Structure formats: structure tokens, C-alpha cells
Image (tube, rainbow, N blue to C red):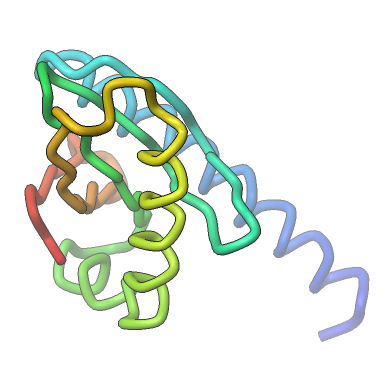
Length: 122
């Protein structure tokens, strides 16, 4: 594979990831969540989606994979740690942080299927 092919493949994967995040956000909104942030970046890591329903904040990792099993397996222990750390930073910056509860979720986006939301996935 040439460098040009690698760059094109990365671009396609990047676009596919953004499309998966948009679809996951739509699915969450339809379930009653309000999207507070997308691709929230901190020095400690990134959260794909920060969503809220009532006093519950969901830190959502979105994975576009061929199956839900591979999507769940794709969230490594180090990624889970980074998401939790970034979530702690996000939470500390909220005025009402003391009354919020936080949960880490995964949304699996499969080709030609509606996203599957796994609550409290890690």
C-alpha cells in the first residue's frame, strides 16, 4: 500500500466515524437525551458524545463496526480509562456537578442497521 492509499483510507475512515457519531447522536436524541458535546477533547482524552437526560450524564463512545460484538470489543481498557478521565474533567467544569450522575455507554453503529445503545457498558 502506498502512502497515498493510506491517506485516502484514513480519510474514508474519518468520514465514516463522523457519520457514525451523527447517527448515534440522532438515536440518542430520539431516546430523550440532550446532546451537550460532540468530540469533546481534553488533554486526558476525547469523548465522542456527552449526552444528558435529567440528572444523568452519559459519556458515549461510538464504534462503527460490522457487528455489535466487535464494536464492544473495540473499546480497550486504556480507552475506557481515557474516557473516564476526560469525563471527570468535563464534570468538574459543570456548575451542577454535585447532583449529576455519570455513566459510560457505547453506541454500536453497524452498516445498514439502526445504532444499538449499550448503557453502562464499562
